[in-house]
Image (cartoon, rainbow, N blue to C red; front, side, top):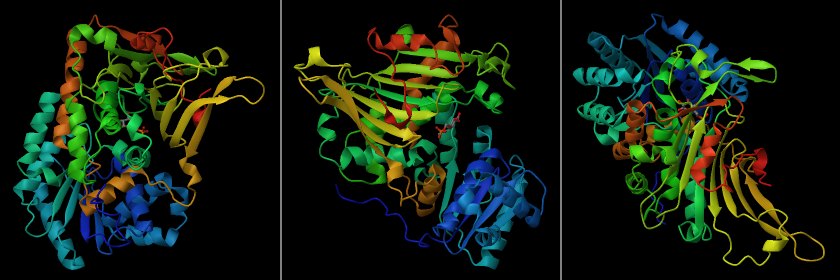
Length: 513
Ligand code: BG6
């Protein structure tokens, strides 16, 4: 395959630029963005001439901002990074701050002047990334204000915006948001971030498939029986009840993260490895998803909600008791679904996707279940039923495992399933970057491969929106309750339509038997 993708930059080869974070005092900024940028700085991947401008609603001077960022880095950056305290001090000197009310158009004139001043005094070209770490209803407002003051024009340097999910609330609102953003920015200036695509192990799915001769020939309906994708979380909604209650697991995890993972698992090999070719292939998968009609929902989609449960003598609150959640909320905190991709490669192979909060483990993995050998010579001798699986573990304990039958040593031909696993942690000399580090750096060098393209976002909404509408309009479609620390409602196993089959219980260290 021709190698066309932009290479990882050599140290300090990224163009000089500024990063403006709208919502710089918020949770995302503190927990993820600032630690990621600091790490890029430590890894010497930021340009020599780089500044970070925080744009937030609080009134504070530059020094107070630096002190606050310092404190939040102490809390959220990796301990090893913090140990480099002289570098931390040097990093803080690259931070600037301006108070902005995002709703107030004139504040953007002040922002423009501030950028002009900094650009002049620090001799930084106006290559600018605007990071929208703000509530989604403000995306179009901020974009419009940037346009009003010409902060989107590229005559004096490139301009890019990074937009966090959710990209819209439904198909219609997603299309509308896109239209509004596109009035001031071209598609190649819009970076829709999906942090799952920034995960090293998600990218590795492509490498596993396309750089080895032996996976791809079996990666199709002839050899694959079914595919399971699980993204389980131990935590509940924590302090995000207000957001989550208007979102739910379908919008929060499936419409974006898991659809992107599905697309990478199911895509055709691109002819060249560049951003457009890869995204051309992934969008085709999403466009080929077989629609699920309202009447089919009970057989294809199971939704659930966690309830108050005593776990290890501690009472875990139910979803409806969480802060800022309606006491009679019907929002789903668990979804399991069966999905088909109507194309030649995958015709009639079911993809089972599930996600949920308050489950027993935090684990994301993809299981390719292969069809059994056509003639079962050792059927009578198996200790356990012989199964062939390829497990792509995204986290924790990232890696790849293959599960297959082996002869138990000794007389006769007794067969047992064994597991051959590669753990990323064994590549000890290579640290795995956090998703945000990788994605921010990609945007800085203008590589959008790992960002969602508008047509993919639209195709994914087109698939999930009718299900959301059906749930809304047909209250009789059940919402199953499940106890915390369980794998969600038992009804999710009925999706397999076969009493022998169940969701795999993910074990740490890929243990499968
Ligand atoms: C976020 C969702 O996008 O992804 C959260 O909004 C979820 O609800 C998180 O907890 C999961 O990400 P990860 O990387 O922990 O699997």
